[in-house]
Length: 237
Image (cartoon, rainbow, N blue to C red):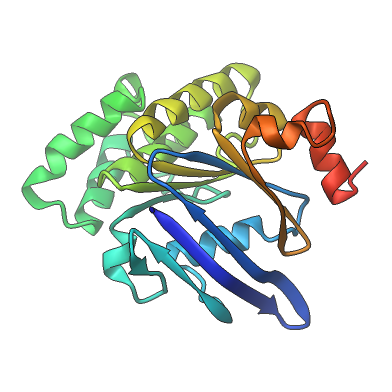
């Protein structure tokens, strides 16, 4: 399996963000994380990527324990956080070369930059400063930096937030393409996005998993749509 979480608990002071969460994700799955704001989705993703430590429980990526000091595990993960932190004064190609150096790609750096620019559709924009790009192209740069070291697991937190309808379709198609040969975990509030690209959905509410299954199985819980099942499970009407 690519990701395993066993009884993961995390609190911020008196607030319990995750309450004994367990699940596994296998290679080749595109899994949607959905839930109300504050349900624990982003916290779980940050624990998987090693940005946060769990208070208790265990997380492993491709069999390697996760944690802030786990460099070996972090090499296996590509991560696009919700706020997509970029350097607006850097040029696209310059920035991706910088990320390649961080991952110590060495002689592979130039070919990796060329490949990811082509794969994410950044060729016409590669000579521009990041700050001059549209929101859609900045998201593509974020995806490119997450992919540049050819990770086995891709973690995407609200990857299409703030994009226009055309840009959303483009990013969805890109995620579907790159997910064909790796594990993808996607956090989103957009049900149509989950239905369009995910093979499975995990629903969080108040730090717990309230449903985990295929789109069809969870939609069937309400006898209608995924969104109806989501509202029924979380009480968000």
